[in-house]
Amino acid sequence: MQYADLLQLQMRNFDDREDLKKREKIEKIQYEKKSRDRQLEDEARRKREEKRRQKELDQILVQRIKEEEQEAESLQLQRKIQGIEHFKRLKTENETNKQIAFERANEEKVRDIEAQQNYCRLLDEQEKARQEELLRREQKAFEFINQQNDTVVKEQRKMID
Image (cartoon, rainbow, N blue to C red; front, side, top):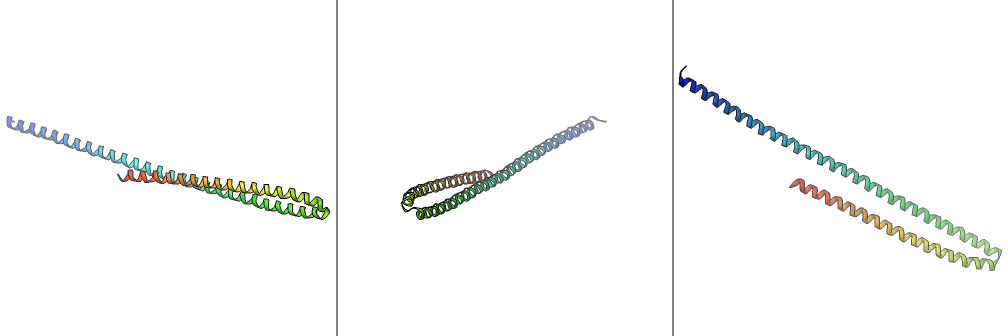
């Protein structure tokens, strides 16, 4: 072989090595790109899963709050019914005592009226307290829902940006 042939062979070998380096560099870039894409997909999947879990937790919390409110209303209604029944019993007792002794009935009637006024005042106070508690819970629930809505909007804006 002559010098020119050897030189040409050496140039082809050099070109082959350069082509191999270019291919390896392209493969490395493609691998890194795929790796970044996988990472981004994993992160997006994780965020979706976290959002779904948070939504489920929010729904459970809202359901619990509703159940608590229903229980409180039911308990308050039972107390009110018991109060009415108690009032009816007191009234019947007063009428019976009135028949036994007019004077004794008058004294007892005065005491019953005072007890009824106190009881009605107590019921009014309980009703007011229940209303305030209900308003407080509703306000708390609305604040929580608004907070969650703000969080969701922020996350959606982040995802859009």
